[in-house]
Image (cartoon, rainbow, N blue to C red; front, side, top):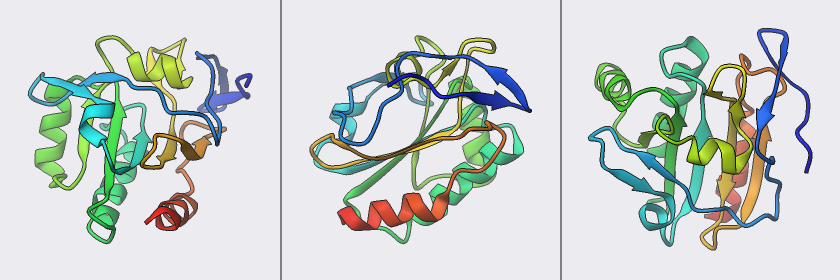
Length: 170
């Protein structure tokens, strides 16, 4: 799948990698947890319905709200659902943010070191070395059931649609 046109603050940006689509097998990726230990996507989420909430930086308004929303929604979902927010923020900043905002129901990890997730899933904004905004819902067999790449990075994702797709899998 070729990358669609994405803008950041109304200006076109380039996404590296190939965007994934519904029906694709979700690739394993590695990121950093807040304690600097490795987050291995397959190992951490085995046997779970997975939600990946992708944000450029948790220190911005929309990203903060997106992370808070998924943290809140996670309490209303089955224990079979694993939600992870990923950004390129340093793990230290993520830890500070999660502590200040009471984020404790979801995992928040950093793709800063290698952009392993961003490049594999087509979310890396080449111009800024940030991740674009989006949401993926992946079933227990690691098949992508829902994916949203925002046309404008500063907009909110369609939370209701993502939650609807999650609930179909529970």
